[in-house]
Image (cartoon, rainbow, N blue to C red; front, top):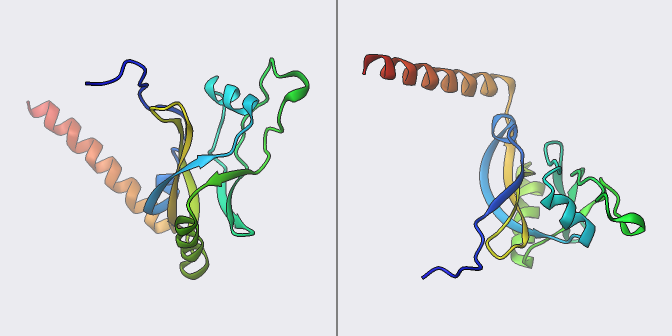
Length: 157
């Protein structure tokens, strides 16, 4: 029986262009080291991860260029909106991600920022390879054809 205090997963920010610009190989869930005002600001729903990426530095993975605006009631305890944030991963996961980035030329792209059922802020991180222009055109053609096919099927009954 489900507990009454369990909350559903609540997506706060999504990188919708990531699947168009990158070929996603693998995804992983990571925690984020945040301050109190950052958590409250994310809960307001104004954060963006569209231009952000993850990078390794000193054996750790950091989220770079994610925008979490200042919390309005935070006064002097507020945070910087674009500061680098540490991602919380196991050592084995960090080594795997760093190996993919270094050897295979992959990129770490955040897909979703959400609160899990326990109320913890999590980031869905993807190991991806950048698409070329012709690959983007191909995926756009497939998407348009599937949309058109759906319209035709509805019209036929």
